[in-house]
Length: 391
Image (cartoon, rainbow, N blue to C red; front, side):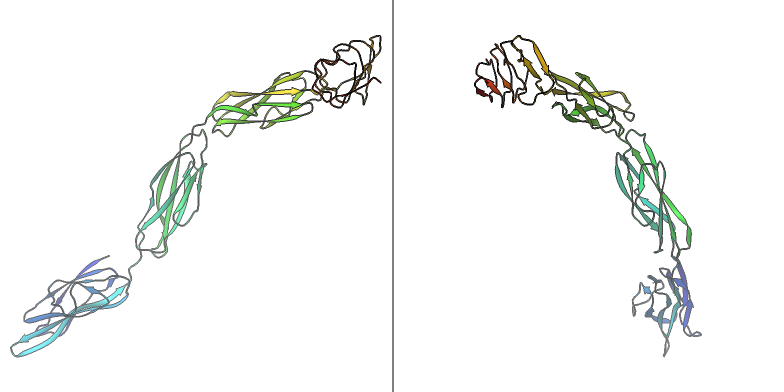
């Protein structure tokens, strides 16, 4: 915006109306001075068009009228001051003033600023950045970009304002610096190469940690042919955990689906055995991010119950036992008076048993559906047998 000065001579005996011409732009200011007042008796502002003045129409003019232009009202303007001249018996009315054209000011674009100028972030987060232009141009176009350590930075848009930068938390990485760039252009202001500004992001990633690993379930029991899944979970924030699994203890009749990964499955082999076995499930967790190479560990206890399938046995009075490859029902057949050690058998469901031997059914746990001769002595049993006569 420009301020102009204009001096207008008032009417005298040898002059008529007086005007000066000053072309201006919108928002410009003209300071108008009037000279040669004598023999002027009165000055009155009589006309103001397409401009504003510190002196009202029909107000008393002074030697320092100020003419101010505002807005975008292109066209002609006029400020006129009427002179009442009196000399003796003669009175004359004339005027002096300023006239000219008003031209719309050329739009400007002189600077652009990003807010905020800096942002410090720890972990994952996002921040909006806004650009503001200095100047009168209304067609400003903003172009955004990121430079520097941009692997973990994402820009929501490359144009418009505001835009958002999102930072990812890269566990264990060192501190990073990202530069946010904006370029502002305007056709009306003839700014095509762009006026620029930058903002700086300081990104701090969380330190990597791996402090513990836990197996779920902590204990489990399976039978012959059964399976059990085990899942490991860590305490910490690392994303590169490597799990190593193994079995220890009574491992002859169990197998592990995999020695790595998560979860894993343990499968029990179907075998005839009266013993209960205990297997320990082990896991070790390591992480390069947290520099944990020796591993944090945990264990789970697996109990394996083998189902006893009674073998078919025919015992003669002489006490010699003859093994029978298979027998459907009865599962066990005993005759004679020989002592038959059946106390280790867990399941005699459906068996047909006949003997006078002492302690033949000691500690047998299940006789459900079995047929037992009256003479068979029973030290302990959980019930469910059918008692009958000799056959």
